[in-house]
Length: 331
Image (cartoon, rainbow, N blue to C red; front, side, top):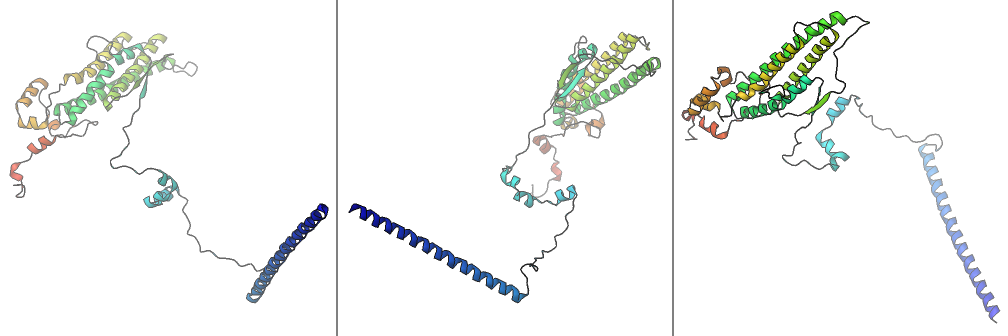
């Protein structure tokens, strides 16, 4: 009895599977028929319009695009701020805040020293009252800041120091060239060339000053270093110069030390041009210490090539206003 029931249930399952397969086959036949009908309709439409599906394929004509210049400068200049704002990079970057700006530039200049004489001049170990390059640069910063506050004597010392550096550098260049020429007279042959000796292990100092005058002073020490290399080389290979090497060394160390001491003659009195024009007590006392100002310095027609922008305090500007020139509205 149980065997006959299992056979009947197996027959029912087989019948159900057959019916499902027949239904799927009927659906696929209907779908293929509809696709064939749509294909025939499209072929008829193409025949009526005169288009052959194999030969006459429809083409689309695009409008001509304007030629683009290949110049990089022109293409960059053509980009507007609005176009930049639409790029991915501009979208990702954060917008600038009001008043935001980059920090000040920082860096150092490596200074290579070859001779002991130049090293002593750099550090200020050349004798009594020697200042050295670093102290010179620091004092020039104080003078610079005073010149910003309209101190005419500070402006005057900027001119003095600049002119002194230019004068000494020109003199050093002339003497060094003369001594090099004398060496070339003896060792200028192709089979016996000679260049000034250099240190096997020079000392390197990284320089950073707040004003240009520290770097100008470093150039002066570098010129002296080159002079001493030439002088020591000439003495070593037997070339006679117009003076002994010790006399040359002492002469130029004294000249450069004198320049490095020059800014220390200036003193900070917090004086302004308004005080000098008013000839008040402060101006008179400063005059007795620092001397009489040149007229060109006082009226600002003479200033050093490297000078700060003069930032006159607000109270001084208000005192300088002529009351007779006030308008009716101000009264």
